[in-house]
Image 1 (cartoon, rainbow, N blue to C red):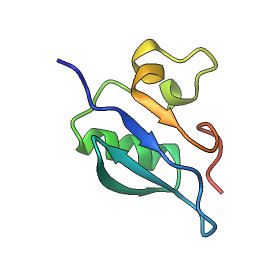
Image 2 (tube, rainbow, N blue to C red):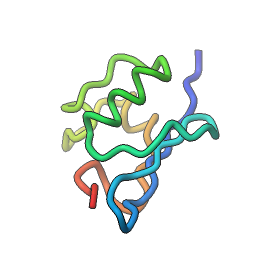
Image 3 (cartoon, rainbow, N blue to C red):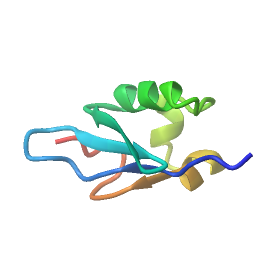
Length: 76
């Protein structure tokens, strides 16, 4: 089963990054933990905070998440 692509938009001026899955806005994440919670609520499981920031990310994470305006370390 194909998973919807996750888009993590650039940080806003007030902090946080908008997160969308399959064209639906899930909310604004202020950390990797927030992003993990959003992914879990969207039934996207199996990725941990560590997977999201690994220098050599697991294939699922690199194919699933489209980081825009900075990688997993850019939140402000």
